Amino acid sequence: MISCTSMRAAVVLSAALFLSGTLLLLVAEVTSTGVPTAHTALLLVLAGAAVLAVALLVALFPGNADRLSNCRH
Image (cartoon, rainbow, N blue to C red):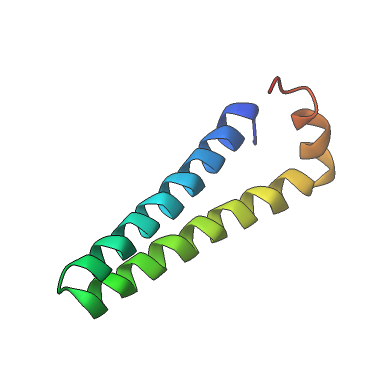
């Protein structure tokens, strides 16, 4: 069952993955660990987008939309 807390956790996890991927890409550009670090950064950014997309799809289900409409922002 989806709740306000789990939806908030999914959004925070998505933001953390995106931010860590972005920072890791910056590290890859500055240091000499180019390709492997850049691939890991790309996977982190894409994982963040995937988590956010799954959270959106779950929130759009009819039963979940009614339950999530009572959340306080």
